[in-house]
Picture (spheres, rainbow, N blue to C red):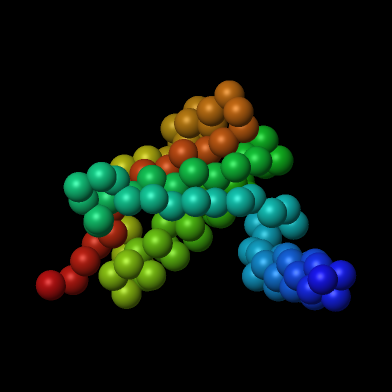
Length: 111
């Protein structure tokens, strides 16, 4: 029983290391991102960038990366029509009080 607990703990530790190796840094900082589709429209999405208070420039690029990743994984294309995008001057004002940046876009799907 004790050996099983040790093996489970080692597996969890190795899994956490692998996730850290996959992190993408912007301006030397890590900005966790999560992109979700808008209900009823898979092409439209919202990217939430946490820790935007570390630096808005890095947060914008992390958001761009999150949007591109969403479109590629969902449709196989990286083209985006941004509604509130990383290059908009208004994105600095889009930072929420909890230190998050929210970007919105739509994947450009070729037909």
